[in-house]
Image (cartoon, rainbow, N blue to C red; front, side, top):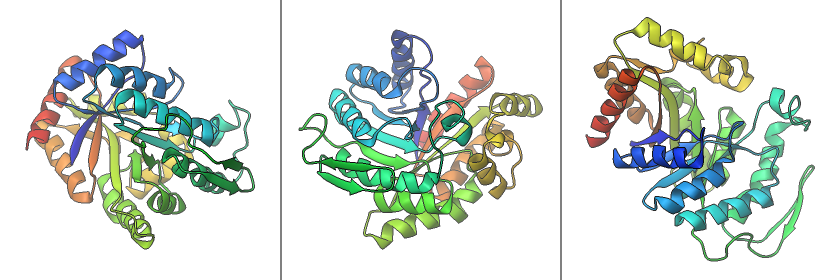
Amino acid sequence: MRIAMGLDTNGSLDTILERARRWRDLGFTSLWSSQIFGPDTLTVLAVVGHELRDLDLGTAVVPVQPRHPAMLAAQARTVADAIGGKLTLGVGLSHQVIVEGMWGLSFERPVAFLEEYLAVLAPMLRGEPVNVEGERLHVVVTSPVGPTEVDPPGLVVAALGPRMLELAGQVSDGTVLWMAGADTIEDYVVPQIRRAAAAVGRREPRIVCSLPITVTNDLSGARERINEAFAVYPTLPSYAAVMAREGAREPADVAIVGSREHVLEQLSRLAQAGVSEFSAAPTGSRAERDATVEALIDFAGT
């Protein structure tokens, strides 16, 4: 299991670049960034990856509803060219409260929409022509978008439900997960996505997992801070469902939090569950974060 680091994109580009350089210098050569309400993550990764050419970079994730798949494919191929081809585009559905309440877009039949979206996006990332006529997307493109000579970006899909996992296995390189515990990954995510990939002759999918992680002696305090920082996720139906599958009610129930020995055990448990890459989201005080990073480095070294 590869150890990656979540790259915070808050702050100026110079600040983000120094943050990425620090992670690289500590030995973390795979960085993942989310697209929420801050800077455009793909643009940020283009700057970071152009400066630091030895990094593998990924989005976890870009929500699909506000971006046409042709435009997203062109942007991703351009970023891949800028950073030397080491890009994984992680995409996913946003949430109804955001799509309808903030963006004013339709959230009707989101999984069906994503199926059409991926039918356009996946081949366009590879530079292939597209002719898709669906209920909500009609796209005809006869030539590659973006740079013509570029290693195509990888594609992973944020998938928590059964149909989403089936889609991810059928048309992408794997899935990127958040708030999914080890038991859920082993018993539910991995079997479904591997079965879907095998049915269409695709190679074994990547399983990228991200969770809050803290090495601490103050277990109750750390849990309280994690629950406060990530309080929104139990209110979102897709995350509430995947947490419930793990028997979790609060974010701290799926977070990796505790002594150094406990954290290392939980990382091993994720590897045994089938996770191919763990993207860490360290939390806590400066001392706790430093202890967490040290544990991650030691785990990666083993």
